[in-house]
Length: 246
Image 1 (cartoon, rainbow, N blue to C red):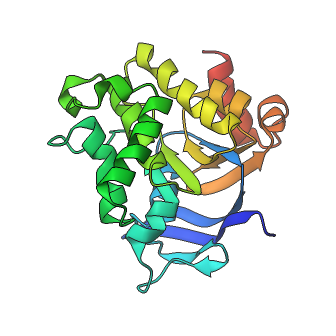
Image 2 (cartoon, rainbow, N blue to C red):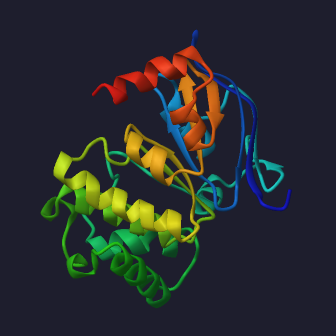
Image 3 (tube, rainbow, N blue to C red):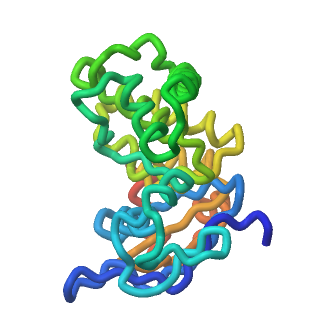
């Protein structure tokens, strides 16, 4: 289909004898907001890292517009400019200002001149509410602000898909809302997003699809109302019952 951006086929990942992902299959279409939920250690973050080529899958395919990106010939930095990633630990450059953090990838990977990179960076920093802080270094801003800068940095690369790896897990509780609000706005604007999250309300209310993983496999996936309202698998029911009773 013309709307398919990513197709994951029979993806597996092992670290030595430890099999972390087993035979993963799913598709990401334009405009999808897919929340990946599951207990810690179920392989969620490893799946995102494989999709972003930060980890090399042991077997299987990742098709980006029909082309397999798992292989030695792929230009990984260029691919990552299309399939961007926001990390739980922000991964900002501490020696650069907020503005410089949002410009460097555009200049070095996309080959933009500094003036165009600055305009693009300013547009997205404004969008996430961080324009007043462009001269600050990461150590001078809060965790929630760092994560909003990281989102702006990823957006400035004009990706087709944004991967979020537990973007709120390193934040103090009062800062979680400001990051989820930015993500919700992006979802409403049609950004294609793949989100590993423990924020069940976000998964239920913002996602177009929810994927529940357990022990390295996809146990169940479907619309949020189906997964949260009428889960088919006992493992899914057990996992979600913890949040209902919390």
